[in-house]
Image 1 (tube, helix red, strand yellow):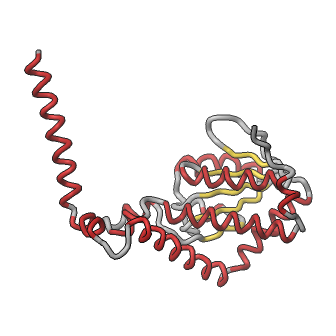
Image 2 (image 1 turned 90 degrees about the horizontal axis):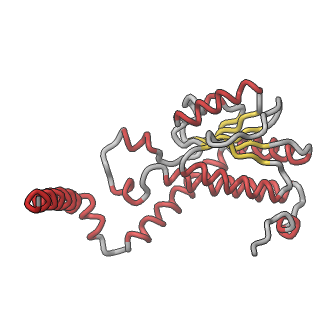
Length: 234
């Protein structure tokens, strides 16, 4: 019995060593780790800033889409309409952050999830969908379910011509790598500095926080009026 356990441990150790060896031998990772002019964290943050700057220019060139999102949400707030947010994974966390801000405007805002029920959408309610790839299966399935109530759909995605992107009444393109990009390319340094959908999620957060600023100015709300609706911590 002791011999079997020992051999098993040795086997596990060998697998771990081979895995570590594979990582170390990856030339691109070695190059990244050995780069001394700037620490990796600085290079990663530089990449974030570069992507945000690219999106700022993109927003300037296509500002009419920003206006459509702002005007729709401003109308919803003024008419006390419900707003729903739909996303999955890390994008869901971005959506929940935006939900908090909308609640600071006094909006009845609901986050759609498959783990609990939400009040039924009414015709004309707004649903905001966040999907970098525009193909996330669970988001697509739930969106199609809710579209039977004929809501106004705002979609944020890197792929406006994707299946989810095409379902939006207003679809805003946010530039950033997504998981589907990584499936189509070999691993490079950028994918290590900003893995998976990181670039899209960062831009989505910045865009939605920018929309909050647009709404605050357009509705003549100051910080204090929004803080009055903020939950007080213990």
